[in-house]
Image 1 (cartoon, rainbow, N blue to C red):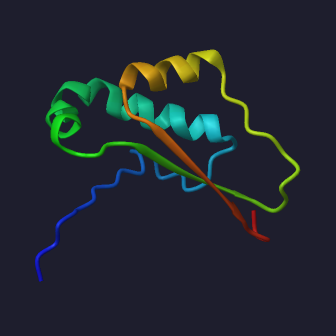
Image 2: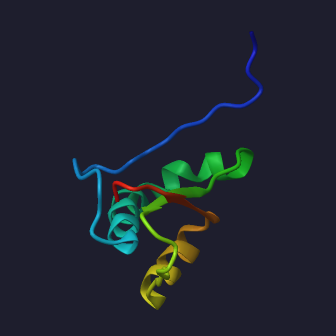
Length: 91
């Protein structure tokens, strides 16, 4: 088989698998990847690059808030953010 698309994923450099907040997780990823932004630039030019984040929650009555600083850091990084919310009784 020949694959027309491939994927690379990065979950951060910390062994944490569950963050206290969505924003904490984003800051961890931004802290690890922003210094490498110039090395990632060729991928931005020829690939679809985006932040994909899953938010697991046990109810849908909460809101997600991102600080202006986090929004600015995401904008400066230059990749779209895709946020998927999932229902989980274990969150």
